Image (cartoon, rainbow, N blue to C red; front, top):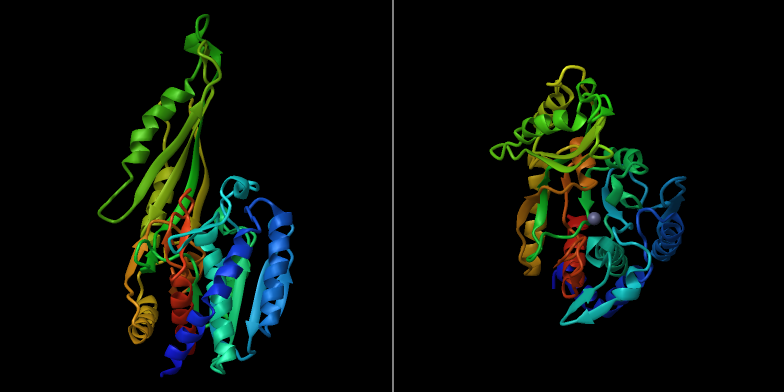
Length: 378
Ligand SMILES: [Zn+2]
């Protein structure tokens, strides 16, 4: 039996332990905006990593949950495993949607996105250690706490760790339903376009007003027309608001705009177009806030080389594997944009990220952990 197949067999034998750990992690709720819960989970994850012989640091954050960094080996370079412990689910979600196992699936808030990935990272390392197959190259596991809200408190750390390693494996969930890896992601941006006009009495002195809503309404077709499906660029006016009451000429109106792009040039084109919006009504003013959040993760040669390694390992293990991309961003966008080879979607198989039917295919726990362990050795 090859070493990679031994890893697979070891992990299959320990599948119930992996399910138990996943259950325990999901039962510790951890919404992005609730620091006490995140810190408690960080403590539990640090203890897990310590039990695996890691050098562990819990990195305090003031406004976000603390971050866990676990390292095995001290040589330079090596592999960075990227996870996040926060979820989009509010405290109390478990009361109505407790962890439930049915037809080989584990349902629960945050199980798929991405506590399953954390379980796989920890168990991949455990298998490598138990079988005496730990690579000489360093492994660093970084578990952040604010991915779902844009990674403001972790981005600098993620980027510093990324450039200190040779490759980044992101344990975000695989692409449903068959578990494709993600070799590209669109970049994301969030903008607020605000129009300032002048308030006036709609009956007594309407001519003295500058109607911010009318101005914004004229801008919206221009904004929407920035979408270009041929290049993969989408610009979505998702929220509009403005005015106070019907007998007042409104002096304020604004729109929230979501931008997705395949490459930096498109991100720059949209940024310039939004910031260059010019008012149509005399006296109206337009201000544009926000900006690019995550840069695009292009389908690069470096990422495809990592994918080729994963595919070879999957073939050896008899697991199906394919690659795809998504309009959704992850922390892999940051590391790829720095030129560090990045492969994403290495977490568990399942479905329903951010949705009520969120679940993990339990058979994928040992399979994907074995794939990761094999990749760490390659
Ligand atoms: Zn995620």
